[in-house]
Length: 393
Image (cartoon, rainbow, N blue to C red; front, top):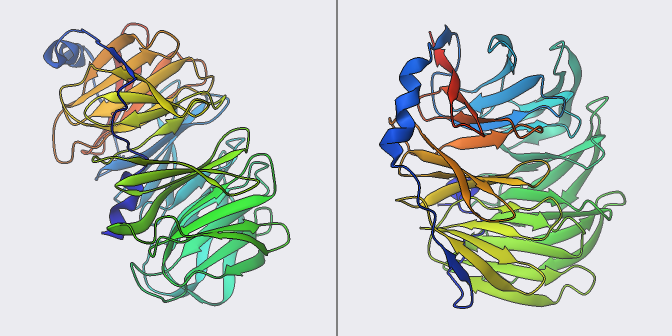
């Protein structure tokens, strides 16, 4: 079960005080009518589901990654493929400044080789991460807020083989230190943006807080150990660094960082992806409807309806003024973050999994959607016009 945890993040049941907001829009079929106006750009793209998409901060490029073990850099202006990077299974990270990409090795077998740092624009290798002993599969690579370091999690599903977290120097690929203390596979990690704290979670339901600069163990948290599915699926520090959110299938916990006191436990029944507002004022919670949780009041602030099926992916725009949701009804919706009103609904071509990954450009003008067929779709956020479609040739 734990190998699917990247999908099972922070989902909560509704709280009765939440405001229910209806969102009437055109039916999904109407949104799909624009697709025939766009001539696809055929090239050697992804041949399997796209699970990752991110614009670089300068909006020149889009980085995508798929289950075909390829990462591709696209020119946003032309839709042309700039270059291709090999990558492991769902193990890729883009630095905060968008200049460096980390790709993990593309094998599950234990190996000293962990992955490489590559220059996004030139494709040249910056550093290679190689350990002194064999490492198990790579999970959840994460850059620190400065982009100078990266952590990788390791282990085998629900086993006690190499449950280690490793810290690497980006410019050289040098192993800085190893964090040992977990007893089961470590699949999730999160840096605090305000302090030298790193949170890591394992398949047994244990979260360990580290001072990543010294290697010191700060706190061991066991709030989820007795859960039906204890594997930690999500970890996130609030933007102000004052709270830590931990999640498993069925429950999410909020903890105060300085005291590590449990502030709130929320039970829920669905699974999907959530997103923190850049200013920390809200958390998007997907379920059958979009729920918006207020970290300050610890209450569900709004329940926004618009999709006809469960929501499995949510994202804020970099500036926080827009929200996007992707649903099993083959639609992606754009919302105004302040009013909670829908702006546009896009119909997505069906086929295979109904899991879509989307990202909004820093200027809020376009949204890129990765599909189960390996396509990349570009829409104008204001008009809903599908203006580019990248397909496998």
